Length: 267
Image (cartoon, rainbow, N blue to C red; front, side):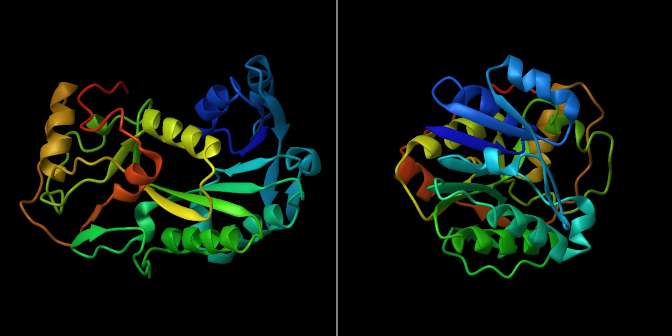
């Protein structure tokens, strides 16, 4: 089986390495200097560039695949031009090869509103932020692609080079200190992605978030203390928030999180 990973970045690169142990893997990048590194690790490298004017690179060969794993978050400027991301996305899907039987799309739990409680995959979403709106539009395009699909809505991503202990160090008057956190570690993102690639589950959306939801104040203070940095000061308040449920993921895939409380993480 061949898996093409569109976007070999922070998540896509380690996933490509893992999947290459069992499958033929094609990996795309927009950086020419990454091509040789991908190839040296047994990944078939492609220089693919997506923009509103079309898709550049050997797209036909890249999309000659059984599974297409799409991991291309909206660019910052595309949150201002909502339709730009949609057009880039459509340009990819319009070139799908008939060989492709599944699409796995990496979305975000930011598509959920702050409902003041638990959110599940069955929520009717009307996101307020522009970035969440473009992701929800992309999800709909995947569902309408004509092939089986899986959507993985990732919570806040932590792991190598994304150490939460640095995010609020020394800051004061930080709002919503009592709100629960919704996070997931890179190790779990990779393992869950591998499970989904191997599974026969289709046409489902899953939240990817740990069970543990301590308050922002407790979690970030502890992580900052771990690094010996100046502790942040949070407001003792609970305003708009959500708590992302992972029940569907655990029941459908039988998955147990590697890092459920982040006490054994490396960053």
